[in-house]
Image 1 (cartoon, rainbow, N blue to C red):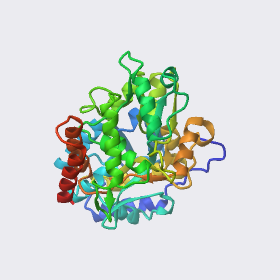
Image 2: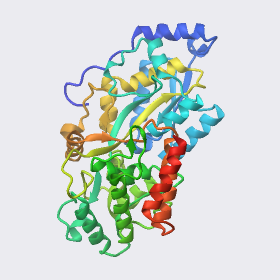
Image 3: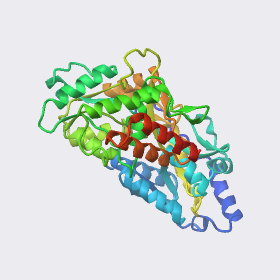
Length: 426
């Protein structure tokens, strides 16, 4: 922790009273805890592999020390496999007590009744929610709390760019395609840009395609409804098509997932990618000699307004099927406390979900200080968060866009088809 970090807020005595009251009211929901035994809660997430080794377990050990009688079992895996596990648990009623959530999943899980109202848990615990930076709500009830937030800047391999004669990260679309072509021209199976368009894990539509729209102040919605045929979306889609036709995109884009993109970049097989700050730890640990930097996603050449900054959250929720909701909430509260949240955001190189928390990297790491400046100079943009069947919307767009890149239809026809499919879902 940085100097002068406030002492972690103690768990209120009221929480303990609430656990006892809830146990009595729910007919033994926390029998083990009430009888002095140990309650084990499962915490499924993709965070542990993206954090320094052992750091999340250390936080869980600290939680257990502060909360005798509660143990935490971490169920960890990459994002894609964690999503599969959580979705399967939601369908079968076997979801882990506490779950890491992507904002794109919240509407679906809420409609299924698989995640519980955190508004109710906060009320039962007497929790002061004033320091929460944001809450993801459906019909007025909170179902996800963003624990830490990541911007998705442009990440560039400085050595490859320099070798290709590019002396600075590109700032606009013309500079980007010029840099991508120059890097791809180096040969040796090196590509200019990585574009993950897997339909199995379609978040590349959000992070790597729509990010071009938001970076130039555009939107894929109008009055909350699909608007995929507007000029801003069309311009971004045509631009990605131009990059595709120029042959600067990594091979295998149609099956590439986010972790594949990061691996390609880490192994110096691609010059540029749009990616989460969460991956910087992975890159540094896997390839300590790699020289890279972060910058804002290039905007249209003529655009001089504020840029939308793609972002994603490590969100957290509690399963409706959990038999230990009160204990699960205590873990959520621990992670959102000022000191813990500052520590976690520092470990993850992310922005805190607690408004009072200050991560160490603002002062200690030049790369993340730069990312923080990018974040402050623009506005957070992720229009998929909270949309109904958000991931299916991404998949629909990806299917049509793949068809266009593959030459089966034009890009305008792909946008028309995606628009029609989205309207049906809305």
